[in-house]
Length: 206
Image (tube, rainbow, N blue to C red; front, top):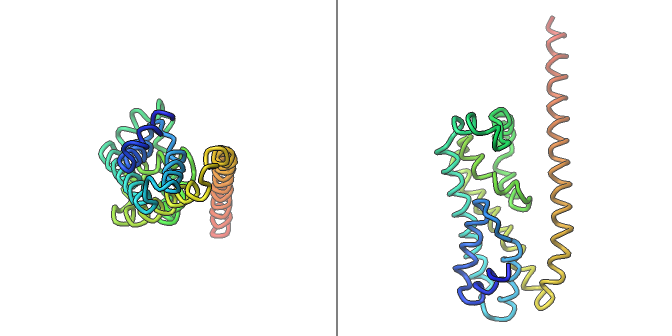
């Protein structure tokens, strides 16, 4: 972390861009902290906050496009063979694809705010072949909102960014886990309701 921040002091926008690219691909890069620190540097006048948003958004978009095309290239055969070892079973991909086909464009706007989920989204949408035009439009919107939030937060917090930021991140991670849990429970209940309605409809036809 300290090494990355020192590089940020010297190379600014380039380090911010690369941090987002590598972090989205799923390398262990503290992306929120990097964006918060970029906002702090903007507060100090070392960087321009608009330039930080452009660099971070570009890195996020490039990282997601890379993962999208990796997922599209590997496709279902790869996950049918190696999915169980990766805890990413083909049947889970198929069931989740229905969810994304219905809500995908909306979910892409908020998925960046959910840790872990954002790392697999690009791969998943590449595998399920969400139309690239739809993917790219909502990808840009979601990326812009996400990076702007953290960079502007770092700028507003100023010298206190690190102390306050880490406390907020703990709450942010807890809230994200709760959101993921609620989404999973909601999907499970929805599936059970659909099955029950299907059985009821079948009985009525008979």
